[in-house]
Image (cartoon, rainbow, N blue to C red; front, side):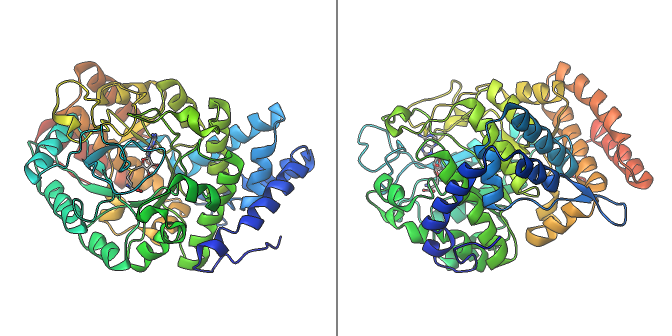
Length: 485
Ligand code: SAM
């Protein structure tokens, strides 16, 4: 299949080509009832065992092929998509779900984003920026819940939130070791910046650099970002290439669903992933699927493109099928019911017990004054952990891959080599054991230890299984922590 755009170009208008997206949508519409093609695509996408019998691989689907699946409304074919998506998830990510929490550093912002309450014209929302002492206090509160992985969030404001401030916060976060706690991976969600600044973030030891595209439709993007540096669509869309030039291997894409037609966004998102693979040699590490939520002066109904839960689930399944090795993240913007459905079709990371206000974790009650959006899933981390286990998922606080240098294309080949069961699986169990020993309620602890006992048997390598068991015993019976393969 040949496409009408330049996947390797470093210019956003060429790798997210509007005409190519329109042709894709036409092709998808023309083929949405083409049962033969849909069956062939689903068969092509299913995991295949590697020639050496170890592990399996998936071909994925390109943006045109995946758009046909997304357009298809035939109930049995949609059910089959969900099956294939789950099969892929289990083949590469097993039944593990990684946990993280967002940490809001500052809501000062000079942009005019129409969907975000931090927009510069909002004069009623209190503006707040954490001091390093406050960062420490937030991190202690997060460690006391059991978190090991954070995503830091800040508005764009070169005066209040310059890169030096972000770097100071990262250093502070990594320096806090409260009781048995520590934060082992800091992912960063800040505005598009320069190669030089990305290099500084890389040197500060960040995990993934996350930047949501918001919308891939340039005309719509320009309307939704009328003022401020974020108005520059090309600069924003080309940010991941700069991040990779700055040495960051793991980047996270995302669309803010609800701003524009979802089929357009889906095609754009996959074209972006194809571009990174073609131009930078490695696709996105994660894809996030946020939906617009109510917030201070924001009403999602103003954007006319809200998507129902069923379509949202189908989008997640089609992403899982199209980019099998990319992690997929769903946040607490979604309710427990929606998150349950999403977990079945390929989500690999969820946030838990999130507070989206600046300084929110040190408050006894969830504060709403500086919130970026309404949190739908308001359960405690312990409740989330317990719920994951009840549904057969292993909650994982693992951060081993990037600390062992398994990032970028090295992570991808690791994923394909079938070694995940000998690494990620025991790492998940050992980090779950840390959570259970240090933070869980007695009921969750009992449930978790039973799960660990059962899941240890699924480690194929005998020696690895033995070491994992010994480490888990050490975690239960001493203060020794942070074991990893
Ligand atoms: N300021 C940075 C930027 O411009 O990319 C990133 C940080 S911002 C705190 C994180 C993300 O929150 C945004 O990229 C946007 O997609 C999302 N967001 C903003 N307003 C939202 C809303 N009302 N509902 C849900 N998500 C929202």
